[in-house]
Length: 183
Ligand code: IMP
Ligand code: MG
Image (cartoon, rainbow, N blue to C red; front, side, top):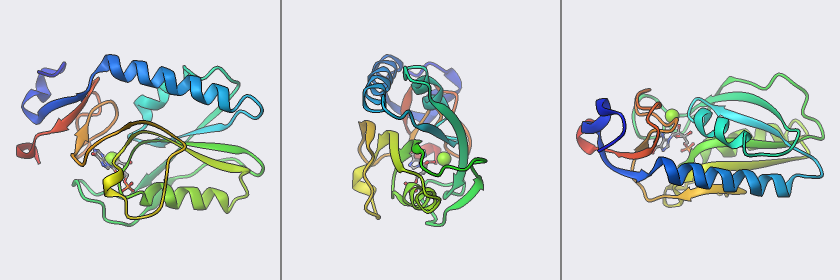
């Protein structure tokens, strides 16, 4: 039984509870705080999926970070990647010499982040780091490893805590596995 009744029939099971999410995100914030004391990164939220995670994560980082947003799309409304990446919203500032921390909801094929990482490296960022809440390593088609990862998960389609299926379910407070009947 999920917390939002409208989604009960669409969730096969809860994968990560609200409590576990909060606990892990706080740990990740503490790790990032430790690691970037010398040069706090510009933390970049990859819209839309990462926005809930990002809002919690940045409040657990005890450093004078700057934040910004990018949007990329590699998916249509389905559950399978098209393989094409489009930058829909770009960073407004010069990032020369800056540490950049890309914050993503989930890494699947790895194409989206591999593309964005290369793009920002080509703009002479000092280093581009990757934080992801979720990782599905078994689905990778390009060589990409996150620097910080919340949870490695099996290959099921998940929703909630910012993640969508066809733009729905982003407001669920936990991560659930989408029922195959709802696809
Ligand atoms: P990649 O480029 O294949 O790594 O795709 C990453 C993007 O696919 C994420 O930012 C999500 O928007 C989407 N995605 C991949 N797996 C899932 C999932 O299980 N639930 C919701 N979105 C997903
Ligand atoms: Mg998405």
